[in-house]
Image (cartoon, rainbow, N blue to C red):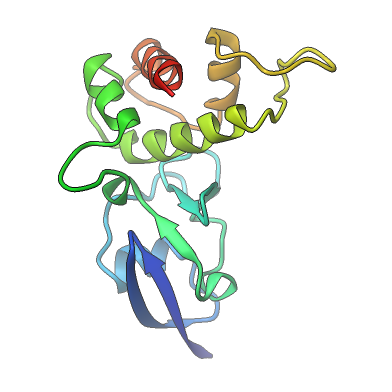
Amino acid sequence: MDADITLHVDGVSRPVTVDTRTTLLDALRERLGVTSPKKGCDHGQCGACTVLLDGRRVLACLALAVAHDGREVTTADGLGSDGALHPVQRAFLDHDGFQCGYCTPGQVCSAVGALDELGSGWASAVTPDGAQPRLDHDEVAERMSGNLCRCGAYVGIVAAVTAAGARR
């Protein structure tokens, strides 16, 4: 069964007809031609498909498109403004937070979401009980642990996220 929905992708309203079983990732890539989020594992285990949905990070391969009709979807392509890179994107370049680049859009979106969570005081698995989370290696590594990099650029990724968070 098909459904007509509208996704607001990177600030642009995009009407699309999708089968009700279509994932948000497939709607973005196959129906709308938005190729920034990548299809890695298609099981929610690698994070390559991470996008921001109304500002919160989600795995687009696990979300049904019809469930997000009318919502704001931000991909790594939609983070910057006026041709300028988002501070997290700049930090990834400055700290060599990528190698082949396949996972980078998901890493960047996850980093933006993780820094927002950290800034809102959300605890993670490594935040001491009752304490405010701190921007440090362990906290960043834990928050980014759902995003895999097959090239092993983790040192640069953690440095980039930490640097971007320090600039906030």
